[in-house]
Length: 284
Image 1 (cartoon, rainbow, N blue to C red):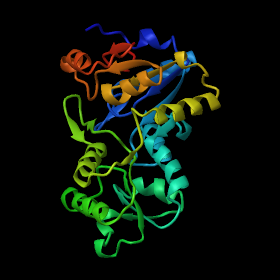
Image 2 (cartoon, one colour):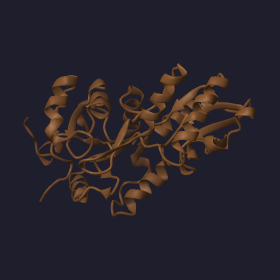
Image 3 (cartoon, rainbow, N blue to C red):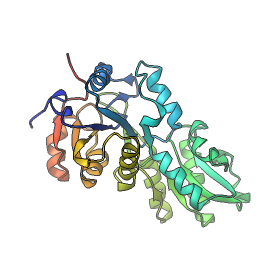
Image 4 (tube, helix red, strand yellow):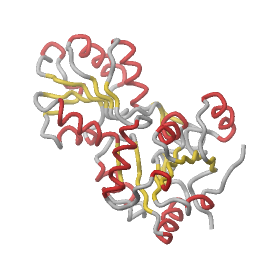
């Protein structure tokens, strides 16, 4: 497996799309040295956006996370989350009534910003749930996994309502060697149990990349797909999504894809990144 230094490739692009978890940060915080990457991008005039399936917080709060840790130029307009796409769907399709959600109070921002009445699944009364018009999967925290996942199953069995998944990630990195189960995996499990098709937003679906591309074009970053690089740590989400949209892709080995398994997984899945880099950190 040939590794390419990240610094050696990014000058060929006008815009970089970064995944968040496993590329810029993990559960413990920003990856050491990632500040140098953004200093280099600013020096070269290369634009960038963070494309994330994280719907746990609003884009403003997601941006503030980076700013509080020294990446002051990651502003709200540079954060594109799957929750934003789900919000657009809800605006068009579910504009009245009560929306049940599974996740934290912060994640409910995507519902409350539309003026919808959002209620945590823990507070739903299954004996009086006729006014609930949708169930939204937002985050893997903020609820009791046993009781509340069972409640999700029974709500969907009782009510003919859409289930909307705002984060398709199945896991996210805790550290260089460990991952945790993400809300996408929990939603997949509930989907299998109830036998209904859920509406899902996030990578690797083309909608996420179309949304990000149109956003970049509107802001004058680029109008040429060949000048955009997608950087991610997962083959199935980041690399496949970027490949399907026609972007060059760089797989980094700081998150879900471990260096010792990368070659085998690429061969098994048949998902080929344009480049494989040890990390997105620029040394020196």
